[in-house]
Image (cartoon, rainbow, N blue to C red; front, side, top):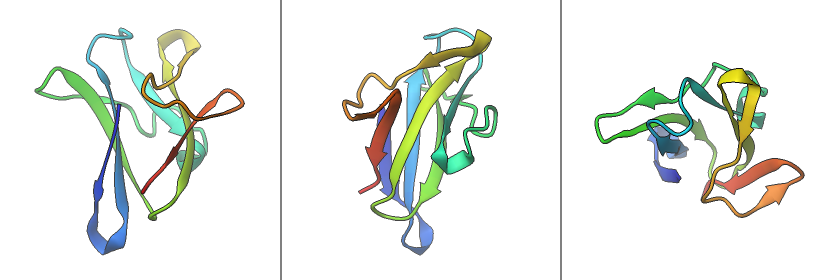
Length: 93
């Protein structure tokens, strides 16, 4: 799931959310917003039974991303239907 909200200075805060245990182990969101670097945006445990990571981008930014789990397992966001090749695509409105 992806949530968006308004950040300071007119930016959009995009929060990437996955269930706490699925998949097990550490998971990072990697994409064009962090030069596809694993670990830069690792999803962290939240008290509501999920884990998440957030990035701030300009309004209208088109984000290409995927999740990277333990063992090099690539995952798509189940709620994002738009794709560019293997990548999920999300526009920060």
